[in-house]
Length: 526
Image (tube, rainbow, N blue to C red; front, side, top):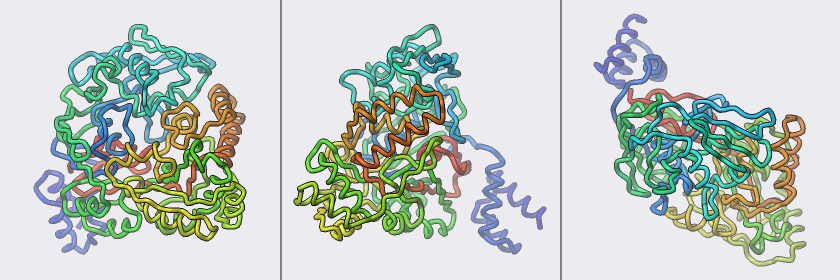
């Protein structure tokens, strides 16, 4: 039987037999469908990437108000589009290590204050223009500009100067930072001709694909860049459909309209996994679903109001009823055990008496409006309803306002004082804190400003003693836990799914969903 099964596998790999026919033939030999499917998947993966064909994606998060400017990317769709056409100086490896991308190598002075990144030899942009160290310097300069709205602003504020010297980019920091290679790989910092100063939304970069059709919030089509230097991008064509409705997105995968989706709803993930020819992929990491309050806007400028809401939420209930076990309880900081220098804080529990105490102490007795949408995170309206119920147990009047999916990231997030949101997390604590909690960060979506926190963050960058640095991060976590505008009830697993039409999925990749958003670039049409 083994010889016959090998023969059948070879026919599938040669394109002479469909997967469905293979499973049928295997069943006739007494092999279960599940085992036959696994056997064939391993054989396809072992055979290596195949070139050509089209990979079709259905992703959540895009809207008509999005931009192709990488500085302004705010959601999974925008990130995926950047991955198609753009690359940064560095990138995160599967094991969480950092490696060169546009930069072929990097090194630092002994005190980690001066860093040198060498631009890869012979690299060109998709328009045929050579990539120079000056383009890299201009990219940094644009994202650090006075009028920038870049999501990377908090990261690069610590750069004192950047200059080009031949193929080298020499970056001098205000204070030493051993994590700079991680920070400089942020997806907003895709290297563009002249830094994107001339045409920030032209989508010209060094990535494996060239955008051919763009309909914001609806559809993107990209074709393989014939001059791409690297090993990404096996399919000839990528097609990305924005499907924000959870049910429609799953149905698109099941019907074969798309080959890959993100954000499989936790409630139905088990059912989707049992469907024929579909693989569900679960990855734990730093992603978290949140409720964010603007600390500079009434009534959230009163820390007792913030504490009342933090004690008024039932975290375990949300993990059970929203994540259905695909995640873990949060503790009002953005950091969990997936970070290298994590320190555990005493867990804050649901306590309606403490919630009522702090609300009474605040002197505020009016309603509190929470804005939400399915576009913020899967199950966000249901999570908001649970929050409303648990607050009612403390006598807190929480009103939930459901907002349209389209435009949520431009009209609600980072603008309205209390809303639901999500973060994909970052590879290291400095990057997470610098992006969203440093007082000067443009993406400081809680408007949290603490001189003590900022001082600790800057000091931690310069501290090369790992024990002392870990304690500094622990102190920062305590400050956010007690004073911040972040309510973090849960850390979510990333739940993605792909059809058997594709091969090449790698389990346990760090970073964002979909293999750190590289799945369509690393997988192939089987």
